[in-house]
View 1 (cartoon, rainbow, N blue to C red):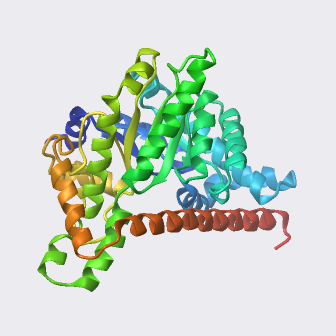
View 2 (spheres, rainbow, N blue to C red):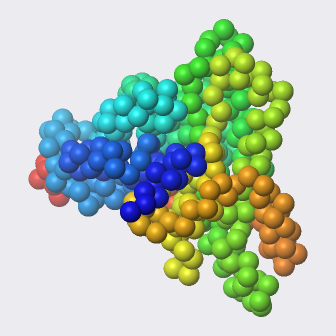
View 3 (cartoon, rainbow, N blue to C red):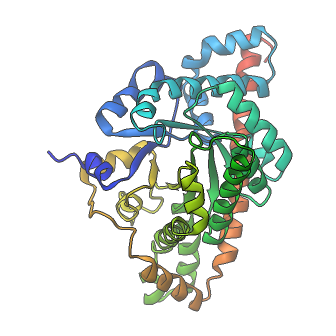
Amino acid sequence: MSDRLEELSTIGVSIWLDDLDRSRLTSGGLAAMIENDHVVGVTTNPSIFGKAISTGAAAYATQVASLASGQADADFAVREMTTQDVRNACDVMAGVSARTNGVDGRVSIEVDPRLARQTEPTIEQARALWAEVDRPNLLIKIPGTVEGLPAVTQAISEGISVNVTLIFSVERYRAVIDAWASGLERRIAAGESVADIHSVASFFVSRVDTAVDGQLDKIGGEQAAALRGKAGIANARLAWQAYQEFLRTPRWQVLEAAGARPQRPLWASTGVKDAAFPDDMYVVELAGPGCVNTMPEPTLRAVADHGDLRGDTLDGMAADSQQVFDTLTALGIDLPDVFDTLEVEGVDKFKNAWEDLLATVADALAADRGTT
């Protein structure tokens, strides 16, 4: 029986799991996925933690009781619960980090999404999370909003490894690259090492198709129908081209000579949201050496079972991808507006998920104290 996940890894894709809960840690489930499924990293977000804590209350009961007796509020309790999970996941991933020289074995934790439009508070929380988790294979997730970009630069300059999240457009992705590189340059100018700083740029995929396909359905006709499910992949492939272009610049050559590591593109939102599309689509069509694909477990299992891998599907695809964009524009789809809307919606979704998480934990604390 073929090992499709091993094949994907051989292509050069780092397989990360887009999920984390305490039972994966205590049961050995995450360790088993490292051993059997070629998983070499973990990403989290407010929605993932909300689901973990709301559906796995028993796993968190002891800690909730301790926090309740100490009169913790929901914000403090959520920070304690999530950082403990991420710290323990970092420990599970430590072996992967060691054998990949820190490139993989990474676990991400996000700054409070309510800070997405606030630069200085984002910087402060990035520092606090980095210190509290206190693991070298951590990544701090900072949104790639206009306000988040200076926070990325500052965090990198202070030696904090960063996962820049909620990237939707190639234009913003180029700005993310600049923010990351600027942080490295500041650190080098200060006489500090950049060898141990790692970063990924999380480029969201399926949400683009959901937004664009809705407009294509309203336009109607054969040409519009033929473009369904094409925008997200084309967008990511154009981002890949931008990444490759940067690696050929004198700016990168100077950084590399100083010991810097590339900021790898990470394909996020890779679970298919339209049942009409193959469930392995956002993995098979975005495979290439040096990228990361963070998958929800159902997508990972689908690839393992029947993934139709065809080797590198990123290099050499820029011209075709640009043609997809040109045709979408000719049909009347305002792609910059789509990307702006997706960013606003993405920030709002994570804020709402965080608020739901706080409410869940507040209820659990109150119940433990008998004050509900």
